Image (cartoon, rainbow, N blue to C red; front, side):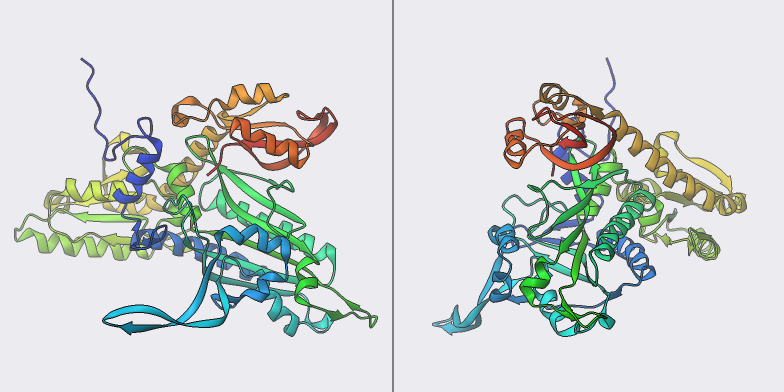
Length: 503
């Protein structure tokens, strides 16, 4: 009889991928549903991951000359009405504030005092930023304007899923204005490059960078660039976007500047953003059936030290040694920052505490008891190589080796994700071939090998819409070295569409 292996998370990926995702969120103590449908409460470990992502992105933005600011959560409805295509793209998701007071009527609170004009709860900020830019920008000397804000947005989701699609989520949105089209296009490409570098280098998340089709681009944009990542079930997750807005929003918002030759012109604008959806990408790219696995670059703590406390006089000495180890580790650095360490001082067995940290995905677990104290050793586990079991090592050797170990874990997770992605990124010449490779889109994606299909494409919006019969979308278009017949029209093209089912 075959023995069934136990896992720390149930169901497993192979049993129920969607259920497994929710189980990892719970087991890693990342977030939980809020009382308002579609919203989430992000718990400290989950928010710690977001803080790491924030810090890395924020540093990169500031290195390229951007500065942070903040715009209001509420946007006058009239501002949204100025840009018809933009409004239409968000209309089904918009939340409105229509009243400003509650009244107590016979012991029950009732809505009172309607607003003269409804206020839109920010789904994105292009319209209100445009209003500010119309006041800030008068001359070519005021350009470029390079700003970013860290904020929350609200988009009323019909089918919410924690981190992937929630009615309220956290993100950053950059907004810039430029004197020339060339400068704005350069900015659009630069910011997508930052997203790609952060995804691949910090999140260990291999992505495909490309441009959206007209059907899939951001409402009101001229061009949308994006990065798309493949999850372990083969589905795509859009992980960052950068939009060249041309002069559309400048025209709608009345943004004008006087150029060096005295002529009045419209600036060219951009916007770009990434959100807490990246935490969902981390979960579905790196986690296993024992819970979360975190790349060291975005782990809130890179090392968890677990003192084995038995309620004996030796406990004080064990805790003192743990404090000493933590202090020594914090004096070491990795990737230009002090190593992040926590000590789990809770009473209880080492095994119970260890599995808590396994499920949270901390990269390195260190266990120390009275016997280890006497021998000058520690017991360690690598979360990315849990099957290798524990290692007993001298304390000095462990501290000296830790920076290299963190680099190895970061590289291992990136390599595993890339290998998984590359094995499921396949080429097709026809739609029939694409259908065969993509399968029927059932719940068996983790085991089926379905993933991305790359095929020649220059189809129209109508031809792209017809892909709905196989349940996929064009995630982005990427260039190829040689032309080939479009799978929809037969016209020679150097564009390749990345087809996938998506979150």
